[in-house]
Image (tube, rainbow, N blue to C red; front, side):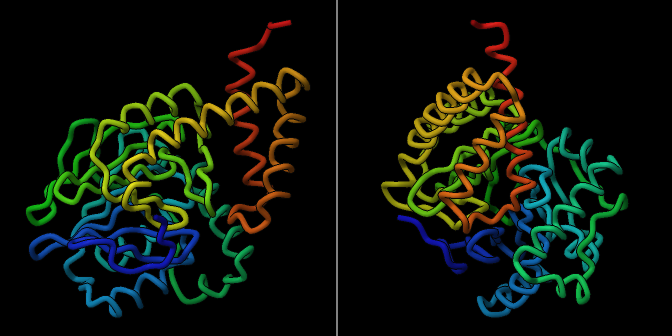
Length: 301
């Protein structure tokens, strides 16, 4: 079953934000952690929801970035500004990206672009949401465990969606946070999100399959629970395999990365006009995917 609206997921866990983008608050004894960073324009929603759900901002002691894409780090500058002592965790590769001025420019430009698409530009007049080079934190890697007031958060490296992607798993709650590396539960399908490397992406899905999952906590379009959550990683792999076959067919037919990417983007956005990304951003994602496919099949007749 899929739940799109913000609110309580289970004991110790809440989803905050909007339908298309959100973060999670994990509450332990006397302290909490925000898991993932969402898009910048959800800051007003997150702040009002903390109050609505009876969650204390002063107990948020840490924030875990699951990967460095603009739509997964949006609330970080605001929360960091309000509490500079907050611990911010991310993979080593994520911190490399987030310390690059060119990456920060891209994050800020894309964040403002999607905010404009949503008609919410005024949020930037009220809140400080742009990334800066002053934000830094601690590195985490595969096998690390973060204690959040007696609740363990296990880190797994799951590249493929991006080179810096990690997932978080909370055994106590049977809650998995794969970010986009687990596939996006859009409407009634799973949208594969192998943005950087399809091979790694599918291997990461296989890595997550043995976990006992009662709650699949996606960054986009809510969380999944029950039987669907238990089988989600298997279905996500099937969706990824099907999509890869489609990309392969289009590339081998066109033999042109740009033409193939435009065809894929046009088809998807025509079928899904309410998808949250701008055409420019989504076409760029398709181009990244096609570059990987082209490397696999370049030279074939």
